[in-house]
Image (cartoon, rainbow, N blue to C red):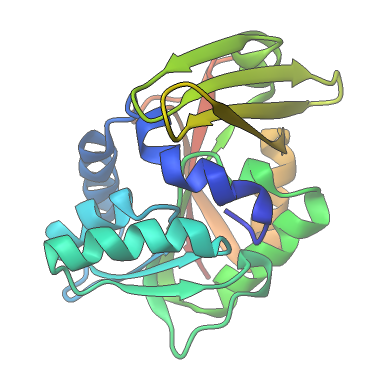
Length: 251
């Protein structure tokens, strides 16, 4: 996530609201890609927009030396709690990914779960790509996913989802704005005594970008596009693909 207080309440319930995400399967998929495309010993991996750290933990368990960066301090608080429980040697840094600064270079950067879609516009995407390139070893990998216009228009569209959980009641409302952007409004209803509820609203936007635009931005930042896959597969995407996986190599 980029630096935005709009994720403060969302951070507390993020893991509950995304229980449908199989992080172990995602980590296994990324591990396979890395081993195929850039097998190195003692691999230093940057998890950009790491959120609550679930994927960081899964990659660390697979032997990667993980640095997790996120712009939301609230998200990172959740990540640090997991780290304290697991004891995994993950380094967490609170930074807006558009202003990424590291003490050294990394072998692989991952940026998953449509984090790049949260950025306001193409200049922000280009800035992130340049920053990642700056801190990636020559020959290193940049793996990221993005939601497609098809997902924004068809899958998310103007859908409303309800989450009736023990800890919170959440109304998740999507609104497709017609210009590749989905506005997501989250209404949280929290109860301290079981009778009275406090309502908190958080809102953010996700923007989809054409594949060719992202490929050009990668080239401009010093990456060569190795492959673009559909969802968590090694298959080429189709017009109905909801999520693209980019694999780019630092020149």
